[in-house]
Length: 443
Image 1: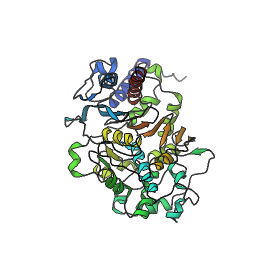
Image 2: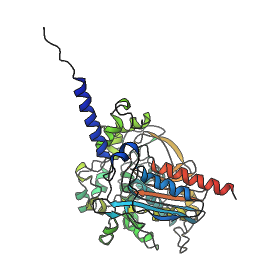
Image 3: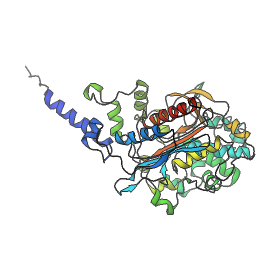
Image 4: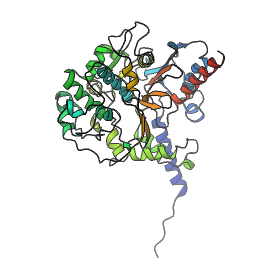
């Protein structure tokens, strides 16, 4: 009789423990020590700056706590309330290895927060009569593959073109017609009633080609012409300038180790890690499987070009995903949107007819998103909406939002991506809304 192999449980436990610790250390910040990693103590709070107005001290405390607990390593948070800047905070490092400190002027990649500026640009073109939300895309672009989709439907991610077979960013940079030709031959995904499919990259690629056809300039050029000319604002959709390199923060992305760590390791093997909600685990599993629509839509960029700190990535125009800016710029623009598109500091206005902004924010439709695997609400002009909040999040946690009910506008940007579910912004939002509640109750 053959002898059965005995399972060496201590050895197996040792191997699993080493692997778990390897994954855990790979996803944490390099400046954190053991007490910070495991006990959430002795985490570094470095280079803290900025200010808050009276009544918003609790927001400052919540922001500091993110660093003290090792959740944040470099970021900026800015908020306006009733037209006044009440929070302007920054801390940490823009680049830890180079000892480059995070400042109020640091420029960082904001990923899908770029979609808010993209939607704003389209609203400005509708205001000027260049585009029409109710018009079919083929009116401007006869070769567009979806013959029936309108501009409004594209803005709501209903064009059925959530991904393309992109072979090379360099090739796209060298050939100005590359994306147009690629999009024209891309097949539509099957129609599923009462759903949408998040166009993580492709909404911006489509809009950029559309804008080039009707204005003879790119979406990035339009933004530079209409946003960066406004004093104190800094926003770059591709074409990142050489003279701003000293202000640029390097982005630390979520690693494969982190996805495995969050999804594959049972809680009983690692009791000190938080349990992910089932819907988030489901999303992550879709994300790491290369055959799913979720993976294809969110990983349009070829793996060889997926270096978010490369010069190539910040040079090419990817309007939905590679805007570089700071929280001050995004919050200031959001505050202007609360005031009919007018900037308080110089009375510059974005719209000839301010009613177009009401149109862009109108008709929010909630549908299940086949890519994000959850319900999302998007307005006629492509702005996301959650309750009273308009705006959108970027991958890893960057945020730009405005709330008409409370006359509140705010933005958070960072240099270290955070995995789902996000912790930083919800905690800052909770402190911000609590401060406003106290202020309004006392008045």
